[in-house]
Each structure stands twice: as C-alpha cells, then as structure tokens.
Image (cartoon, rainbow, N blue to C red; front, side):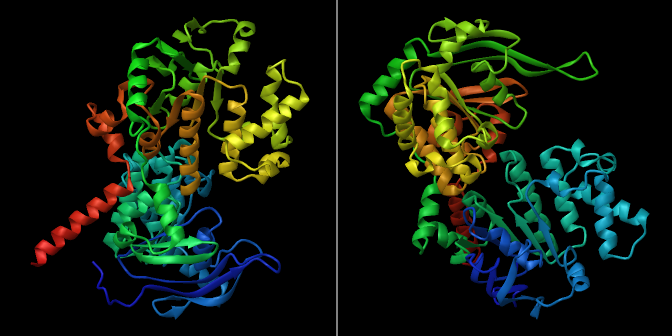
Length: 559
C-alpha cells in the first residue's frame, strides 16, 4: 500500500474550464491530489463537471472548451502547454481513459486483438507478432475465456461486459500510471459491473497505478474507493476519506446525496397493523393478474432453432402489490412485460387479468382493457414522439375516454403533471428539452393517464442520477399508496427492489428460478444464481460495515 506521506502522482490545482463567453464555467477552482495505489472516487449528478474534469487531464476537451486557470502536474511536472506530439505520448502511456459504452469506443472494423496491439505498438517498440501475443495474454488477464479466439472477434460479436473488459485491456496495455474510469460500468448488469470493477481495481493495485473512478453510484464508492470527492456545479464541495464520508458528510449537498442513495424500508414495513392485515387478506383473495406457464419463442435467422425467451413462466400479482422481476440482461424480463400488455403475443400459456382470460382476446375486445393495463418503457425518450410537446404526449391516451372533452383533457394533464411532481411550465416543452428524470416522469404520467389498475415499469431507475433515482422510487411508492395500483417492476437495480417490491421473482434463461417475499429472498436465497446476483449488490450500508471490520482487523494487528 502507498505511504501516507508519499508525493502525489497527480496534482490538480485550482483548475477552471469554460466554453466561451456567456456560458458558466464547467469547472471552477477544482483541486485534488492522487497518489500511487490509490482509488479516488469522484461523484456528482449530471452536469456536475465530472467528465469535463477527466477530459481536461488528457487535454481532450470538447470543441470550445479551454482551461482558463490552474495547473495539472504529473509527478511534479506541469502537463499544460505540451504540444500535440508530447500529449500523444502522455495519453495511454501514462494516463489512460476508460469511458462509458465500450462498444462505441471500439473500432467496428478491426478485431479487438488488433486494436489492443495497435495501442501497444504506439507506446512501445515491438513487432506485430509480439504485440499480438501481448494482446492475447492481456485478454486472458482480464478474464476473457478462450482469448486466442476472442482476439480475432469484432466488437459487435462481444457482449457488453466482454467489450468493457477489452477496453480495460486497451487501457492497461501500456502499464499507465493513472487510469481514469468515467462511468465505465454504466448500464452493465450488476454481476458484470462487479466483475469489471474488481478486475480494474485489482489490476491497478498490481501495477501501483492511481485510479480516478468517476461515477454517480455511491455504492461503488463505498466498496472500492479510498477517498471521495463530491462535485456540484463544476466545484468539489467535499473531499475526504470514504469511511468518514459515509459516517457523516460535512456538506449539506453531500448529505442529500448520501440519504438519497440509502436503501429505503420495503413497502410492507412500517405501514401499520391495518396495512399488514390488508396485505395478508389480499394474498388469499383472487390475484389481479395471474400468469400461467407463459411461453414466448423467437426464431433464429437461418436456422430451425428458436430462442426460448420465456419458458414456462408462472406468477401472480395481487391488488396493490408490486412484484419485482430481476435477472441479468437477456433473461427474458422485458419480454414478459411486453406479453402482459399484449405488445407481443405469447406462444403458449395463459394470462388472466381481473378474472378475464386475455391471452388470445381479439384486439377489438382487448382495446378497452388497455386503459387498465399500461407500461412505462425503459427508454422514455425513444417512446416519446419528439415532435409533440409534453401536453400533447400526456393527453394522447386520454382520447380513449369518450367522456372527456378538450377542457377535461387539459384539466387531467395538469393533474397528472402534479401527480408526478412536475411543474406546469413543462407542459409546452419537448422531449429533447427534458432531463432523463423528467422524461421518465412523463412516461409514468402517460401510463397513469387512463387510471390503470396494473402498470409494468421496465427499468425505471436505470442510469439515473442518485437523487432522481430516489425521487422515482418515492414517486412509485406514493402512487401505489394513493391510487392502490399493482405493478410489475422489471430491473437489475437490486437496491431499488428492496425499496419497492413486496415479492421478487428471479429470472434466468427465460425461467423463474426463485420466487418469494423480498426480505426473505434477500436474507435467505435458496438458489446459487440468486446468491450470485445478491453478491453483486453494492449497498452503502454493507460497504460501511466492511470498512469497519477491516479497520478493526488492522487495529487488532497493530496492537
């Protein structure tokens, strides 16, 4: 481990960046140090300046951006003012950047082995054969099975997690002194995220490199980082050791972020004896939604084989209940949701809604039921018509109600905006003018417009800022309490599951492999796959407990 008094590997001193006159500074007086063998976490919401900071360190600011004040020193020497050739030697060789969406970072027309070899030869004198062998060896080191074959693959032939490992291999190939990981695991499954982070931190520790881990997930900070910097509006508002931060942040904004990131009690807890009794009675009543032996197959092009996306799936959801459907990407979760609302027709089994079999119901007969069965899509921006303002987007489903005239629809739009905690001023905004959180809320408002009894929420908290994620969770909980809706909550965000769901169904390869009450599943999982998923959960509370135990062991060892 590093010596506490070691000279800093990287020193950033009062760094300020702007994008021209009239625009606020993207960075303002940012200062911090990074030592060898240290992992520094930088946390902040969208627009805080995290990515601008990372790109400033590499002199890769977007067009119009410029450093107007401050200094960046690497091993005591300033890197500002280096010419392009000197910067080229610095990038990759001494400071490496790992970004989000690995497949977009890789060259689509070159094999991944050739791309890694290309980076190595740019920074070290070696022949093609030697560089290729080094690339294959590095792919093995980052945990890719059959690296010789995978080295000959193109990016589109790799999974997201595998592509991210390739990007890590490219970043590490020249043994850099500093690795900048800018939301490097955003959008990955929890299990893949942990594998990637474990690999990155382990590899950097072995090399004695410093890591700047940029994220909006405080769970990642709690489990992987030595120190943390909280950014807001282009400034660092708090900087200190992670353990002390988790025990009690000094800054009000930091406290707000930490509170928003903590797991909330499950809905069944703290609701009083009456609520608990009502829930118990609901379990004995007829379920609102009953799914029996559901199947959905997709043909494989050029083959007689099929993908069994849903394979003999059964579950039920009572009135006022939320069922969380969890599992890794490709497990069939979204396909189940789409079958429930008849966006996809199932190939077998049955779906009963409020006592009525809707499995093969003709479209004309099912249309009136669409008002009672709605879906909030994973990517609301894709689902929202970019040419319509918010007012028209929310009002569109209301046309299913012949009893509402134009004035009634406008009144209902105002009510729905208020229900999802959005200002009336956004009624005339277009989707591209909204934040990701606002887009999610508009998607929820549209789904609730017709007063549904059952709503499918498909990854409603994915890739959102800490506070926005907490707000969406609170919104869904409040709506359930106010209007008594039932919900299917599709997600791989296990922290959100503990805050929302009464029951959990774990899916793998199109099948439900475990089902039960939320706290029972989390406390006593019976399946190895469920235990693997839960082991990838990164709750802040567990990270703090692990740090307390490590500190106790350290003190015991020095006694």
